[in-house]
Length: 237
Image 1 (cartoon, rainbow, N blue to C red):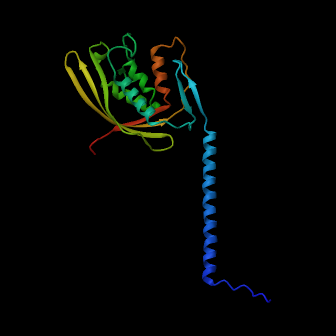
Image 2 (image 1 turned 180 degrees about the vertical axis):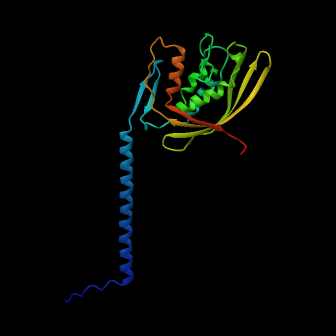
Image 3 (image 1 turned 180 degrees about the horizontal axis):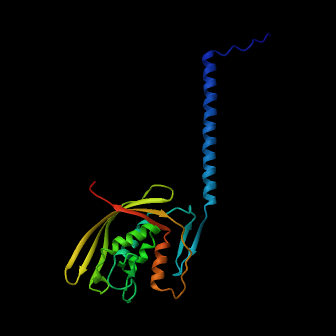
């Protein structure tokens, strides 16, 4: 019996086979790419160190390794809140003590409360000096005699906006309150936009007998942030 040669595959069938092969090849490439991405992601996760540390009070915290310039929103908000409180809390006493506040004399002859001076060390050096000079003009002498108290409360923090790998902006709506024994109460709006920069967290220089001022200074610097500028913020614009 004479065998017949196989019939030639018609063009339409050829096209279907070619398209099917291309589809399989494309699916294989997509799966390979996805597998590569997952491998890279797993490698990055494995390289990021996660550990637990025990605090002095006996509690444990989960610590995850981050980039040296990383600062989360809570850290930024807490830093700004602490700075505001330290800068504008005046009652004739050094914060956290019963000691009278003699103030710190500035180069231009002005004087600011010790708390305010300590807070300025969390600012860029030149900006901090110019800020204190201007603020000293607003500090009444009654503060150091204990006849005037000042406090600040914050009504609003915006979510920090990262403007570069090391800088953020945050808007704050706050009110300063002055209580004068002779003139009564005065309220002053303090609506500002802060620009902050990540800086190296210093090693603690504090000994067991560190005084309160040294503790305040380290407390502000330990957040790893520095104030670069403060400008007016207009909430309704």
